[in-house]
Image 1 (cartoon, rainbow, N blue to C red):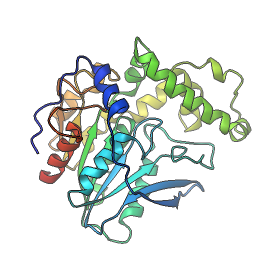
Image 2: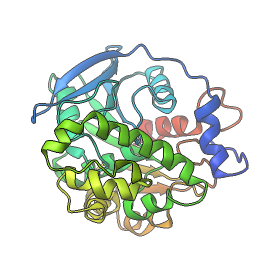
Image 3: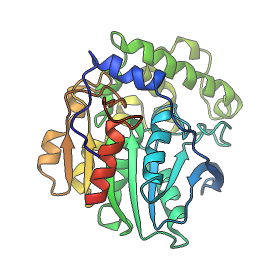
Image 4: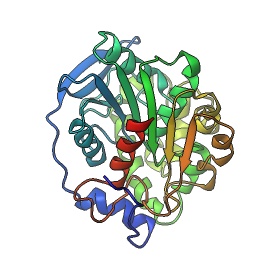
Length: 316
């Protein structure tokens, strides 16, 4: 499948929104499995099983799920090309609220570790590839860097798209210009989760009285995401969880694809220096694609990102 480059649709916002709003996607016949976490919570895993020996594990973006069109599109292409697929849902993202006060965040690699360990425990797969989108890309890179040489040898390749490799400036960029429209949607959804968890959070000392005054991701992360997950504040959370700091330790073939016109990403999210110093990680910056868009004319209903991921993983 020839990839070329994503199509120029005019600007990064159009290239972000058009596939999201207009792309018809085949609904995957997921088999849901619920697994327990060590802290008494649960994760919902959605499988596409065909008895293959190769597995793809997909990590979705902020306030998304395994049902997102970009997740299902990727799952469908890999299913057609000899892979089983596991699209996991972060805590609070599967359609049912999780049990504990914590939910998920950009650096919650402990949950990805639980998912990977579960997928591999029965030795059903000879090889595993990881794909992450946006927040899921950051989480995936952090996980691979933390594990370094200790990453399970069956994990043979990693591919991430639209990854905010430096969380602080990316989160602040989302609070500017047209990006405020996206931010409103994200923060509204996150605030509702706080409301749904009000009893748990109140018992832990969180003040919900000014919840509706939080308008940006840095505001929300400063009041909730950071402190709830063991960080001092939003800056501490961003600094400890930004994947750019973990790239140097990744030991498996890894591809980072961030479009040059991605409206969500600040210039610090393009880790040129970190990749230049790595023997295993490469960075591609196509001129077009937006944020998790990557539409290309002439490829039918397959996104450029899906074809690029399949090509990379096949040859890694």
